[in-house]
Every structure is written in structure tokens, then in C-alpha cells.
Length: 291
Image (tube, rainbow, N blue to C red; front, top):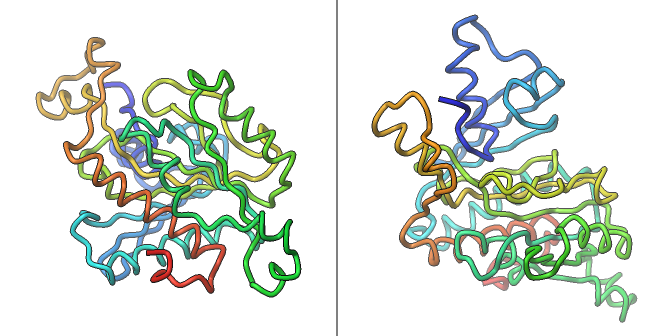
């Protein structure tokens, strides 16, 4: 079976380890891995350090943080708030001290499985207009300079997301771009139960075989952190797992599935990511007020 479709670095590493690294002993050259658990939440960190490591796991060089948790629709307020704070802490740690950011909600707002990015923006506290209109109040507020954009999809706008984000970066001059997007996973157990944060940017649509221009520092003019959650898994992988077939059949190549309650779960995940962005950049903004 060829490499399974996934946007998650932790799954790509696991697949490579199973096929090659274990046969030769030791870790993958050019890739470091560590894992820990906090309050029932598993956090793994992968860093791809070299071109050889990037080729091995099929991921660009950079740091990948994976946060794994349970069913978000069953969480009470305290558990949900703790998860928001944990995601915010990990996101903030990768921001390099940035005090201004452009938050990009990537995806199709009309498609539940692809709506996480645009939906998350409705929960983000945007402060740029406050800074421009009443700078004296902004200075006293303690807020960071945050603006947001949902570039939509090319079929609606006629532009690639990278074109729109690049224009926004030229105007706003943020220190960092945070791109929020839905991802594809190899395993159903990770659907809507995993947040991946990475420093290597993102290729919109790559997980479903519809890759567009990559969003990274080279393409948009500012460092890009990606913040994503898997919402779909490809049918070929499911058939392979169920039947043991050695190869993914071509007839399944364009088929992807998602949970039946994708609407409810996507809405809760969007809130998680929006709140995490707020807590990462606006430390004095209480989560109770966000609710």
C-alpha cells in the first residue's frame, strides 16, 4: 500500500517507523520525537530537522505539535476551558514573541467538514480596528494587534488563498500568520480529536488531493503557523484497514468520509480553536467572556 493520505505529521512518522525505521533500529535520521501527557491529554512533538527527514516523513522541515483528546461534544466547561488553555500555550510557544498576527480561516464555510477555519474566526477577538481608530485606548487595553481574514475558495473568489493572504500581509504587516484549516487523517480515531500546530506553513487542500499554493513565509511574506484539526479520512485507507488489501483501489481515490455529527463537532472545534487563538494573544481576555 502506498503512503496513506494524512495531513498529520504524527501519523506520517508512525507509518514510516512501521515500514522502515524499526527494521533498521533507532529513530528516523533528521527527525526528533517526544511525547508527554497532561491531565489526560496526550501531547507529542515532532521536529523535522533536515531534508532527509522531510523526505522520510513527507513533511516540510519545522516543528509539529499534536494534541490528542476525547470527544469534544461531551466535555464540560472546565475540561473544555483547560483544553483551550493548553492549545493556546502550545501555539504561543511557537509564535516567537509576536505581538501582532493575521488569523486566516482557510476553507469552505458552506461545507461542514471544511468550515472549521472560517467558523473559528467568529470566535476571535479582532483588535486592529481599535488600534487604528482609538490608539490611546488600544495602548491601555493590553491587547495584541490582531486582524483576521477568510480568503474563501477559488471557485467563489477567483483567487488562490495565498494571493489573498499575501495581499492582507502586505497591508497589515503582521509578525506572524496563523492559518486555521480542516485536515485529513489516516485513522478514524483522530477525527475531531486531534489539534496539530506547526511552524512549516500549510498547503490548503493537500489532504484531499486538491493542493493549492502553499502558505508559508516564502509565499506570503510572513512566518506562517498552521492550526488544524482532521475532519475526514479517505475511503481507500478504511478499505485497506478492513480488508488487508495491499493497495488502495483507484475507485476510492476521491472518496472521503466524516462523522455523521460533523456539524455539531465542527462547531465545537471551531470554538476551541478561536478561543485558543484569543488566549494565545490576549492573555487578559477571560474565557468566560468569550463564551
